[in-house]
Structures are given as structure tokens and as C-alpha cells.
Image 1 (cartoon, rainbow, N blue to C red):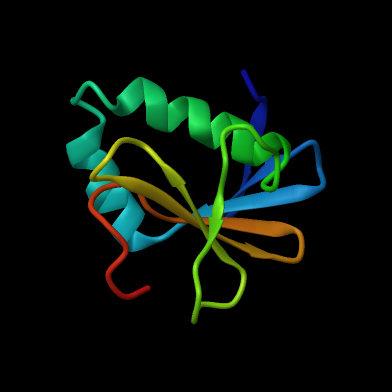
Image 2 (spheres, helix red, strand yellow):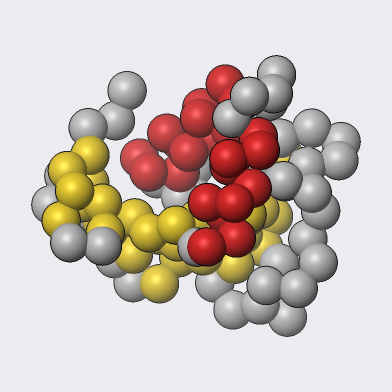
Length: 100
């Protein structure tokens, strides 16, 4: 597992990467954490925190949204995250893309 430290509003990974969660992600995670998809979402988050561009599993750049990427949770749901410099923002974990 990845070791994270809380610092103000952000989580810090190895004192280099900051991780934030959007309001939408927090609401969706509250729903998803009790489903059979929770272990898959946690595993994908661990992979993203180590290296947001690591493959496998494959990631997809979202067209029209700068620095936004998604990874498949299952056929219907995607984990969407945004990479901004040294910060990774977890944007959504339930449903399909919609608007960011």
C-alpha cells in the first residue's frame, strides 16, 4: 500500500506528489465504497499515486479536458483523475464521463 501523510487540505505522497479529492469524488466514493467495485477503485488509486501514467492497466486521455485521464473500473464506471504539476486530483469514481 502507498503511504500518505495529511497536510492541510492535501495528501502528500513521498513529499513530492499532492493528492486532492473533488467534492464529486467524495460523494461518489461514499456510494462506491460499499460496492464490489471498492477494491478495484483502491487498486487503481494506488497505481495512479505511484505513477499516473503507468500501464497496465491502460489509461485514456479525455479529449477536451486538459490533463484529465480515466481508467476503467468496469464496463460502466470510470476513475477520472487530473494531473496538474505535482498534484493529482481524483475527480470521479462512479458513472461515465459527463462533464468535468
